[in-house]
Image 1: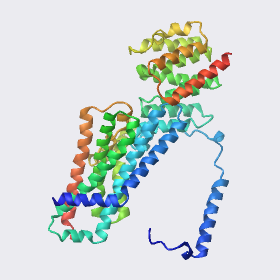
Image 2: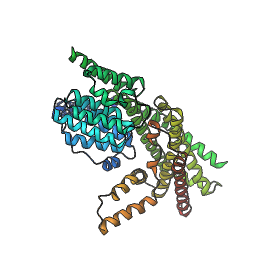
Image 3: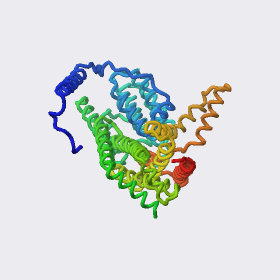
Image 4: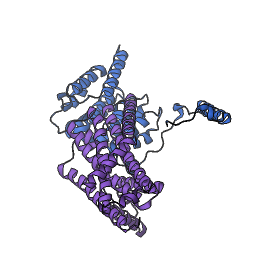
Length: 225
Length: 253
């Protein structure tokens, strides 16, 4: 490193070749069509076993990176999407990211049929671990009532929550979810109570999730004005 | 204490060869990646940062140890330094174990350094468990890389063999689970394949049970699980050292 000869020692054609090759590389990359993200398709969901194999024994990181990847697909096919969410949840059953995406992103799309698919995923996965996953079903019940206007579905979710959750540290409104659902409350009011109590109880601490929820509450407020 | 002197010379070589700078670059790379993903994550950004940083640092530690051991050992062989050392009144066992001790110390130092940034995301006790496990994992990789470098005597085959052993050991649990899954074929060929996978697993360490990110994100492992993971790594280090000594004593250098 310390006994380098001066640049002048390099033949001129080598310098020229280096400059041209560098310029060609930059031009080729700048002109390359990287593909519009709007056209991106979600590939078929891998099985949890395949994902585990690909993760090289880092399932927690792989499950979360898979979620960051699928959230970048603007219009995913919901059948594939549910497969991805299920695989990620199987890879890291204590992770909450797949349920967050299902309940708060994919169940709030403009399409009622797609929303129902996402809500059903939340319900089925809730049944596997009620004490850890109840907040997502509570949110699903609110969406069923206010967005889908499907009170029987909302009550089914509320009843499941009341019957299946055995943890003692859940808030009163969740313990009496069916009454909470039947109360004459608008979506904003119900969401404020739910998010407020989750914040108070320390269930939501992640800064990204806090930002997201704050934004959603502001959107609800704007809509209800 | 010839073993200690040999180990110290290995550490000195690593320091002068720029290993600390590479380690610092690995930490910087991990932190940059963690900062990037925290910007795109909608939830669990804290957990995602910790998981990604831990995974990147673990991979970097293992790669640095394997590359350092292989390059250093082969340089010693090709420069005839090994022949010179063997002309000294030192037994081959002392020579081999002294080198191994030095490389293990490199791995321990890397594990300690790589654990420090994780303190920003996880409890000190959890990080300590992760760091001890990474140190054991690095010791295992050092023993494997030394064994393959001394046996194969060529850089590419040696590093490929060490990497192959490591990645196979990290994936063997998942491979066994696929081979023995409920939908697996029950034909003779499928059963033979399953038995073969089980047989391969018998001669591999369970690296997938070590240095788990779950310890940082959720809760510490039970004492039994942790001791079993570390114990299996140390047992494998002993096995590789014994195999390396066996080969080294038979070689007419």
